[in-house]
Length: 229
Image (cartoon, rainbow, N blue to C red; front, side, top):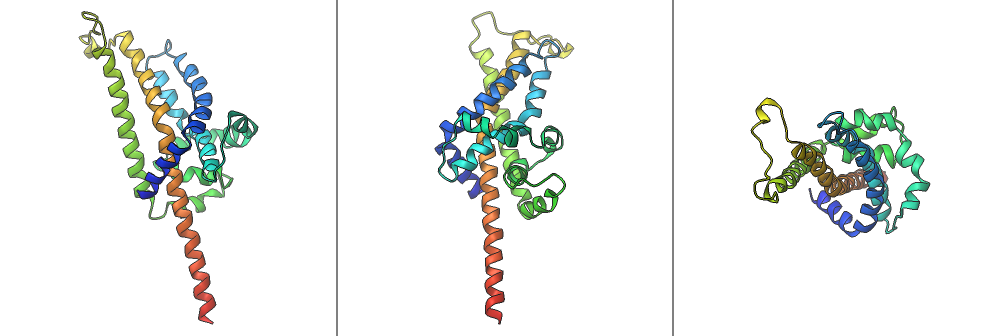
């Protein structure tokens, strides 16, 4: 959990680069998602939910450079687009979306550049004894995201002019007022835009902490072997 807190601080320190690069990628995806609203009111939110692991890759790229004191511009992301956006694309949009600890293990796939088939053992090693913490962190951010989304949707009621409050009497029959149906994906997109960098940063810091544990353990074992003779 201390590592996750450190990740949040890392995100804060590199916020300008993180949010600039993230917004340039996320806003077009959100616009495309909102374009599906006329097909089904629930579709934009579902598309955004599915896009999360892919959007996380841009955030991680910026954070991985920030950890070494490097600033990242949109041009840097563009130059590395093949590695950041297009590598493992199908895997990222499908199986990765179902992972309960995806921010912890994302660096294995993206930064260590292991293939999907060869990454399994490494992922298990990184996850060992840390899966519960990663799941708790994912749950905490999920609750925060839900709370922020509900708070933003509630503004529709708080700020509505007198006599123009959305009528909820048709909810039981499945008739959702259009203004409310539209406000839900907008609120969810806003929460996603704000919170997702912190989630990725927390998982990245937990990954670095786990790497430090593993490498320090390797060094200790080497010393034990050296002094045993």
